[in-house]
Length: 130
Image (tube, rainbow, N blue to C red; front, side, top):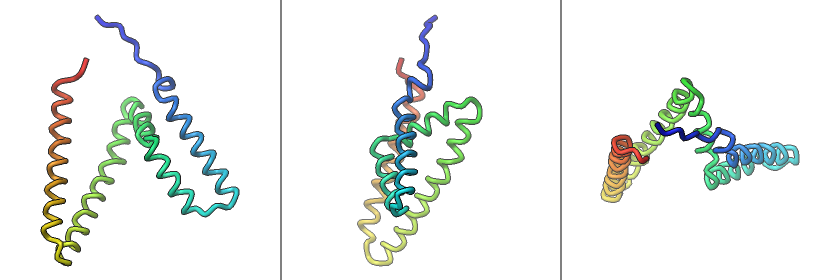
């Protein structure tokens, strides 16, 4: 048997927890100083995307036994539905304005990307790294 101990959540996600505390402090400070809320939201989203702190928050939530994975699924599936619906809406507008060929190419690229993600997911679960 292999007795490898997993690191604690604190050790594994220390930098993400620190970044969330820092982001919250900056948001509170910016709002107290009277900076426009739109600027605060935009800078938070940009900072969160570049530091991947949203991914860390999702991983911390998913680490909660029993309910964590369910919470992540409840939060992410409607997001992908929303993106797909927006894609159809933009596609309908693009076809109506005469961009049918470009739209077809972009949808084909999106479909191939999704197929690649599904194949990667399946292969990742069939052939786990040790």
